[in-house]
Image 1 (spheres, rainbow, N blue to C red):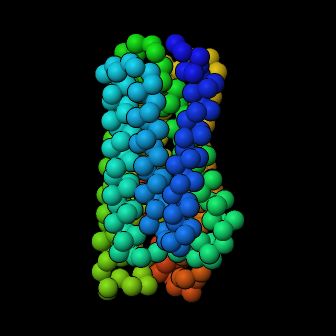
Image 2: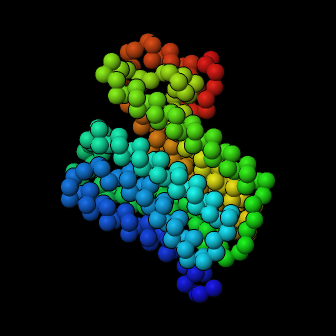
Image 3: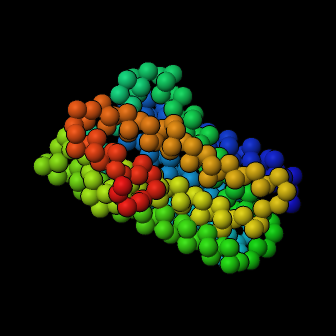
Length: 262
C-alpha cells in the first residue's frame, strides 16, 4: 500500500476533505445568508467521504459495497427530506441570530465537518481497508438494526412533516403515530441506524480501531444532550408551558425509546 494510504494519513486526509467541503458551502451560505445548503452539505459529505474511502482502497468486496450502500441510502433519504423541508419553510429557526454573525456561523460549519468525520470514522476504517472481509451473522444483525432505525426515522419524519403542513395543526405538537410512543422517534431511529452500522463493522475492527465506537456514542450524546433533543424540548417547554395537555403528553410519553404510554 502506498504511504499515502497509511491509516494515519487516511484519517487526516478524510478529515481535511470533510473540512474543505463544509468550508466551500459555508462561504456560499454566508454570502447568500441562506440555510438551504446546511443539511444538504451534511448528507452530501457522508456520501463523498464514503465513495472516496472505498475508491482509494481499490478493494470492492460485497461487504464494502453493502456498507457503502446503506450509508448512501441513509444520506440520500436525509438530504431529500431536509432539503424539501427547507424549500417549504424557507429558513431554519436554529440559525436565527447565527447566520448573520460570521464567526458563529463559521463555528457551526466547522463543528459539522468534525461531526461527520467522527460519525463516519469506523466506516472509513473498513472502506479503506485492503483486507478481504466476509459477511458474518453479526453483519446481518447490524443490517437489521440499521433497517429498523431507517424505518423508524423515515416514518417519524413523514408523520411530523405531514402534521406541520396541515394548517389546522398550527401551534400544536404531534402526538399521533410513532410520536404517541416517543417524543423524538426520529432521533431514536437515527441513533439505531448508526449503532447498526457499527455492529455491522465491529467483527472486523482490530486493536485500537475498536475505539471507533465513538461514532454511535457521539451521535447519541449529540442528539440527547447537545443539538437535538435539548433544543426542541426547550422550545416546546416555552411554547406550551401553560398547556395542561402538553404537560400530560410530556409526562406520559417516553423522551426517546418508543414505549407504551405510562
